[in-house]
Image 1 (cartoon, one colour):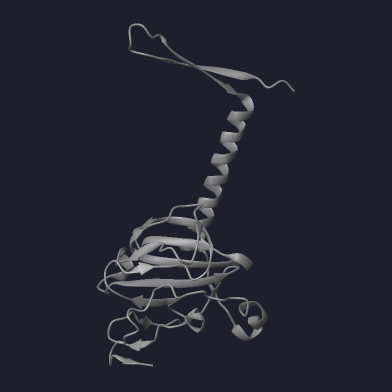
Image 2 (cartoon, helix red, strand yellow; image 1 turned 90 degrees about the horizontal axis):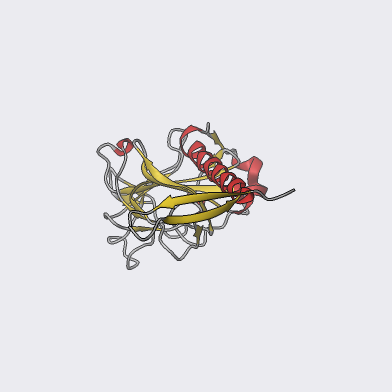
Length: 212
């Protein structure tokens, strides 16, 4: 099949320069359209997982074999100076009404992905603020919400040693809550309690400020 070409002529305001002609092949146009469709599809896929998916709480006994494959290389937020008075804590735990954990910290605290992966969503939502979704091996997905600033964009490859965002309190869902990261772990449309995979962050009862 003959590869038909199209000529694009761009005029110029210069007196001695009439303009420039660019030659674009039919296949290049098709490839550009296909790439745009793929990017749109993956972006919508990420938005679906963040805002519209209907979560199912994992019954961990039935998925012992699967969830044993999860291994966090590091926590989403680093502890500071190994001090219980200068560190971040898990301030809200996972339950049927809270599909993740909240980790507190000061404004600008760096946020990391606990596993290598690739960004399938990075953007702002009125309710959840600056948010990121990362896809990992074996179908796992992690979500990071209420960030002050996202450092990564759609399609970026993620390594555990580079921060992906700064902690903040963006989004209307935080209301009067303090600075914190809302962190979620998913697999195949089911939400999983990430607490058991956290290595160094302790759980703190906000009312009594006693670590558990």
